[in-house]
Every structure is written in C-alpha cells, then in structure tokens.
Length: 202
Image (cartoon, rainbow, N blue to C red):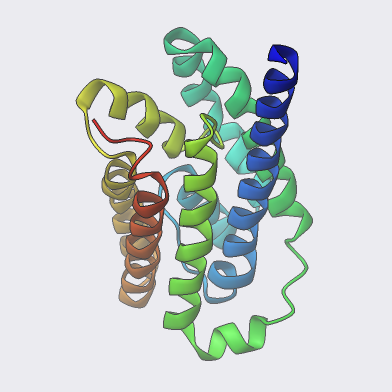
C-alpha cells in the first residue's frame, strides 16, 4: 500500500513537470514571441537574448539557471533534483516548439490579448509545478525557497522579481514591449497565486 502511494505521488509529480513545462513553453512560443513580448525572470532574460541575438531560448534558459541550481543544491537538494527535470523539460519544449506557431498572424494582430493568454498559460504552468513541489529551475525556484523563509505567497514574489527583468526589457526595446510584458507577468502572477493560494498559505 505504501509503495503504491509513493509510486502514485512520483507519477503525479512527473505529470506535473511535463504538463507544466509544456504549458509554459506554449505560452512563450505561441503568444509572447510573435510580438516580442517578455516574461520575467530567467525566461525573460532568455527572451531578451533571443530578440537581440537570435539565440535559442531553451539553451540560454539552461545556462542562466545554473547559478540558481547551485544555490538550491545548498538549500534544498530534494527540490534541486525535482527542479532539474523541470528545467530540462522546459528547455527542450521551448526549443522544440520554436518553429511551430500556427496562430502567429492572429497573435500579432491582437498583441494585448496574446500577452494576456501567454501570461495565463505560463502562470498556470508554474502554479501546477509549484503545487507539486517542483519547478523549472528559474525565478520560480528561487521564489519558492525565499517564500518559505519570508512567509510570502510565491506568486506575488515571482511577480516582483519578474518586474525587474521587464523594466530592463522596456529600456532595451520599446514602451510597447514594456506594457505588453507587464500585462503578461501581471496576469501570470495572478494565475500562479490562484493555483497555489491554498498550498502556500501560512
């Protein structure tokens, strides 16, 4: 019985990692990238690199996650291993879907709607993973560790961290990029908060 429960929890966690990563990758590729909109955190940094230098988002995401994983290794090694899978799946899915944007023309015609839909997908994906004690190894992982210490809702903490990256993107690109990205991370942070509100109550 106990072994069965452990196996079920492991299967549930793996499903959360795969499904959450796929949702985030869809939000990035289908909704944000056609309009050069940014997300926050490590994903935002990877998108900035893509827009400026045409680098692979998943590869840059992997590189930028290394310092955060080093910190996680010291703070919580079980979370390190669970998040490692999330980061690998997300990096893979983002680059896999990079050339698959069937609704790009529609999204480019409705940039604000695309930003909101992208934020919802990304926020729900993060929330699903955080509820199952895993993450993608980016800012959400760092926010999860800090939320335990500070007694804050992880979604709100992610929202604050993401804003810093979006401000940098606004300076590098345009006011439109800034406001569309702000809408995306705002909706995304709220979506994450809704999904995790009971799980991270103190």
